[in-house]
Image (cartoon, rainbow, N blue to C red; front, side):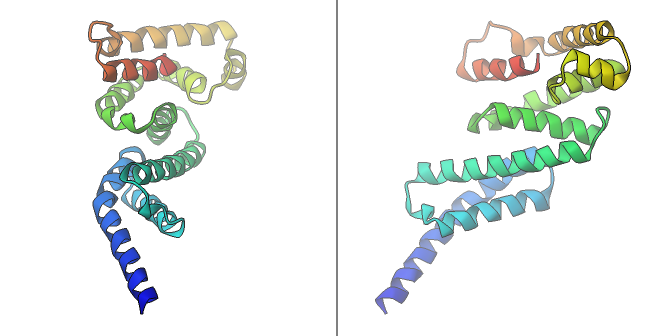
Length: 199
């Protein structure tokens, strides 16, 4: 009877944690994946691990950290697969997956502050000429060298360098408000550190 009662208390405690945090972490996953079923599946798997490893009995901060790390890593794995599946630098889906992957990989929980930044980066890259966009994405998202890009696109290394220079000039212009040192608050410093990885 005691064992049954103990199990019932554990179940209720877990349900309380689930009800409290599921929606929040679903929003986190959906923010990056833009797919309801994928987001829901990742979060449900994270809660199953929370139960199996008895993490739900720990402090609220430990629970949040545990769930965020699981969901972040699972999202990164899925975005990595999407980048390979949507092969082609001019694909809209490849652009979304690449930006989300890089943002999520470069930051932690504070990434939830960056929805506006994500949209600005997406628009800025989309506004590049097709060749600039293709070269920039190979450089920043695929992390290819200028020589590798030149061989892939059958152009000269100087042409690659020129396209990257043009892309960076336009992106710095389009994202100037985020690169301004005028506002010294913490979130802007964090945003700046993320942008540096792009620019």
